[in-house]
Length: 180
Image 1 (spheres, rainbow, N blue to C red):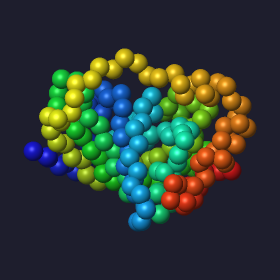
Image 2 (cartoon, rainbow, N blue to C red):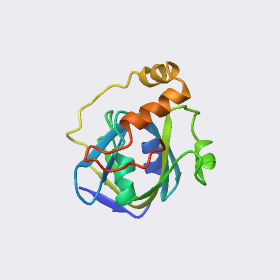
Image 3 (cartoon, rainbow, N blue to C red):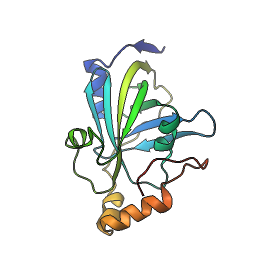
Image 4 (cartoon, rainbow, N blue to C red):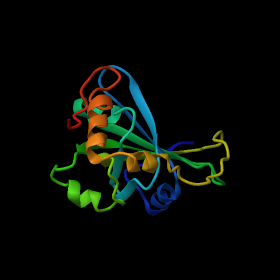
């Protein structure tokens, strides 16, 4: 049975911090809904109603585009180990780009990563837990090194060129606000 909470409690925070992957969901008022898996050391629970996560370069940039139109965001974690649990945090988010006020303060919370495109600052207004009875057991081996190898093979200018080529529009053709 799903249970709802006004904020993240200590047990929920611990659960979030133990997970190796989370999912982000956003949608513009029209067009496609986007759900993306995220990993690496890219998320911080900053308090009972605040989460920040650093978005690294990817092949798309739907979250940024959606947040230009509506600030709704959902983050989800699910246990693949012993405890069957799904946890979602719902709220509104703002996008920070390198150079924006607040970027430096939040970026200090994460390992330095040259391909960081945005930091999302989520104000949580609802937390929901539900059973994870149908979620399979899976064993975590390690983070992939693919992103780091890709970054290591690029200059900063090449990464920015990639953003211009691949990250300027959503799949629905809307702008993402990513610097060119």
